[in-house]
Length: 349
Ligand SMILES: Nc1nc2c(ncn2[C@@H]2O[C@H](COP(=O)(O)OP(=O)(O)OP(=O)(O)O)[C@@H](O)[C@H]2O)c(=O)[nH]1
Ligand SMILES: [Mg+2]
Image (cartoon, rainbow, N blue to C red; front, side, top):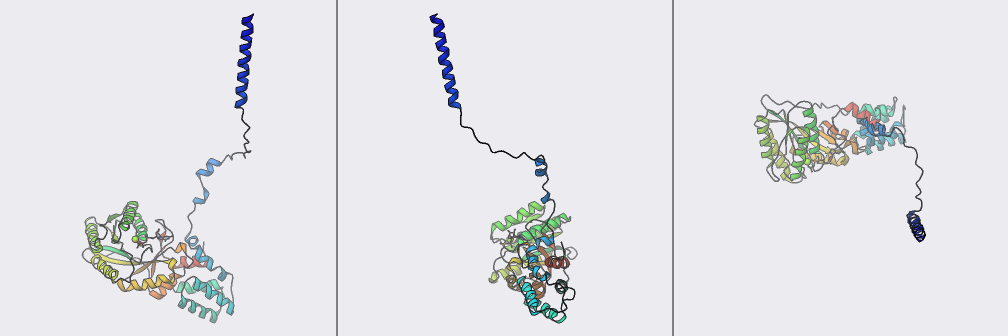
């Protein structure tokens, strides 16, 4: 009997202990917000984002410049333009950096003959007429010589990037390309060019920081000859032109590039469109030093001053041959005046 009572007591104590432990474990309830049901197409959406399917068009890249012309677009067709309307056209043209000369010429014509087919149409005709220079790009040298493209311009305008983009396009077109790292001013410049060479499959010749740029170009030409390269693209340093050093250096690089197996068939002056009219004064300083045959105007995607193309051609009398509209390899395009003017005025894409 005592055994039974003892057993019963033990059973009661154990039961009490278990119940207390369970009670201790009970936590206050966590409130989980009600969730919306998961969409069934979630996986499909992640795999195929529709917005990436389309590349922005050239016109879309120029959207900052184009939005300046919104006010002109609203003017429509008129046989005669009032003072106020002419003032709107003047302001828009000047703000787009078309330049004073071109603006005055266009205003004089609008004041005289009005815009019977619309102000945009009149502007299109005028702007297009001012971009009528021959602008083919030379890739051929004389028999037995190697064509060289030289790139000049001040700091940060986009010389090295433009070389990389052109290396991409030329190698894609099946040409053998060699990059000459003629900017020996800082080691990073040659590193940057080497990266583009690796990315595009072009060859590269570089030297140590501070080396003579002329000898880099000389070595590059020797290698280009040995490897039957089709085109040499030569980078140069972009220090300020007010040191006579740079002028001498450019002249020397050119001499080396243009003798022996090499022949300079294009000298591209690279200008940054975001600097507007300043680009023009930089350009004038360079013109004295290098026999520039074409302009590469970069960063048109990042400015409302697209009209600078017109000012450059009018005031420097040198054709714009390529324009940069972004940072990727395909974002350097051959300059087409029709596409450009339509994109600027919003009469296309
Ligand atoms: N958005 C935009 N950026 C550009 C374009 N072209 C060049 N850049 C950028 O401009 C910057 C300077 O370009 P670089 O090619 O290093 O300029 P650089 O003339 O070689 O400069 P230095 O070697 O210092 O003389 C880089 O960040 C480029 O990615 C363009 O067309 N559009
Ligand atoms: Mg550079």
